[in-house]
Image (cartoon, rainbow, N blue to C red; front, top):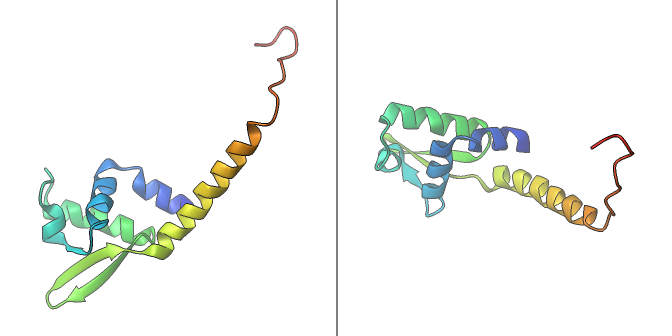
Length: 104
């Protein structure tokens, strides 16, 4: 997947909260659903979006599915953000030109 899919998946605050929980280690759907005001099936749908964006791995453990962050998915996002940051810093050296007269 691309960094664009990762950005789109992380645009949702619930999905960002799920990622925050997974920063501390792998979790099952039941563990991830704790503390949310949405159902376990809704959490599962969010997990599916994050997985399809390449941000999560799913590991079957007995009858449960355990989710963990997928470093490769975040690596693509990191490269994009580092490039963006480098380009933004480079523009600080570029003088701001005044607008031509008659334009604001």
